[in-house]
Length: 368
Image (cartoon, rainbow, N blue to C red):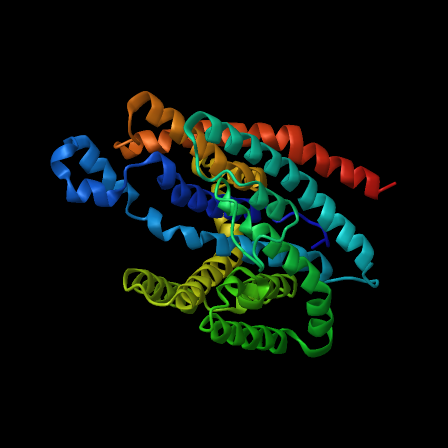
């Protein structure tokens, strides 16, 4: 297998993760909510009460962002698993900068314009210049006064990704000298220390690599297994059983309102084994690559970065427009889902106008 060969199933997995995030976030501004329908059923039609059942999985999909972290670790480490020459870290950092930050900056500009418009038009309270500046500087996750720009809180993952990229040279050197087991053990130890610090009111650490690094490294570990062709030797039945156990534990942790670090740990286990199962059975799954569902999700995966960056402010804008016309949020969850269409199409435009041209330009500049 060639070093830079594209692994097609990765885009499908990105699409699944992105769809999960969309379904989790769309409820904020574009749905009245399950609990309101359950508590006041007389206020809603039979159809509205029936289709509300479609929303049952959505509160559990917020942690699908962990799948993004796994994929990121996989994609960053995979090209370096069979290097014949020493890595140039300066080139690596330049590539990461041009791949992420310019597109991110333009997404912040769009978010700012939407936030300002919502503030002027509907007195939206999320408008905050100081938060915008913190987001631009990638410092929103850190003290003092850590917190997200609430017009687009999804952007908390970009500083986190930056931390993962900054840590990767150290991780790579440790992998080469001591192996993955020791590195992941070290990361889990650091994460455990961060949990203790959270108990002393250092909650901001939960948004950093100090806490979340293990999930990214597990993705890099799968890249190593994939390159060394060790995945076929793993027992699919055991992986599936582990997947089911972690899913059950994850659901119980949320329903039981256990502490947040248990949520992250259990969902990381679930998405790790899900990722492992998909990558292990890549050839079998790719037989369905012409299926409309597979094609659609893969297409979402290709534009997933753009879609992730702009979906939340677009949901907010459409939410205000809907309430202005109909006086309340959609009660029919099918109408809520229909708002995915314009948001995805606008994200597709953003991909073609902003993300892809910047990416192609940076590649041509790099190759000169």
